[in-house]
Image 1 (cartoon, rainbow, N blue to C red):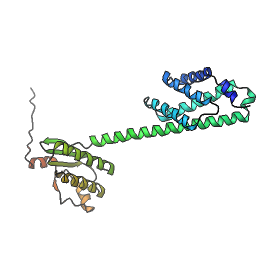
Image 2: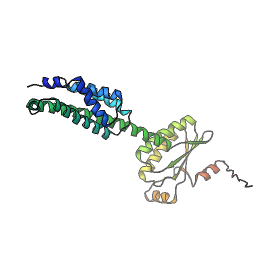
Image 3: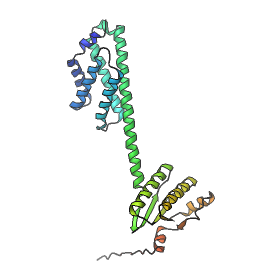
Image 4: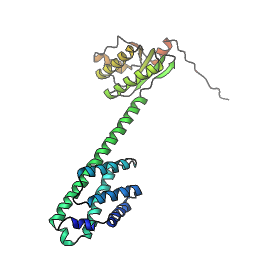
Length: 268
């Protein structure tokens, strides 16, 4: 016996039947079903298709599935379900004697290897796609969490809130340089009232940001260093004496000549 018998029984009609049975368990578009039939037809090849052909099909298939925004585990579950349906249908169409023949078992091992190869492509592509989305989200969050607010011509405020790690410090440096050049700033107030911890690493990142801004002609005034943060900085030997520091952003702005108007609302 040889694998030609499998080829004879795995007809186009059976391929379509397998695709329909698979689609019933999870409604799929006609395009996905067509792609599935194409894959099943590859499996009826004698000999089984090369890795190059399988990888080519898998890359096209996973690209179509990325737009469905389904979790990778669901796609792998659907792939495993397809394998079970495919193997069961093939077994049902073959003579019992052939199912127990070593040739069939060898073919089955080859089919399992092909499904494993498709799984690898799916997982690899989904991982790359997820990393790109995560990277884009982190970049957007970093950008939104470090906006420069222009309060007067050539004067801006950079309010920092939350923890500052190395990744975020790099994002702040990039965005503050770009925004300062775009807004043609001469003076930037960096307010730290929303930063709970200023350790040696954070201080180093701040000095790096300030030095870079100074190089493009932007003067820096720090404000809002909380008492507990100042105490920690002193204990760690962090020296802010070379910088202009104000208690609050309000005081810093008032000393620059900004005035605050309090509006009252009359209740009739």
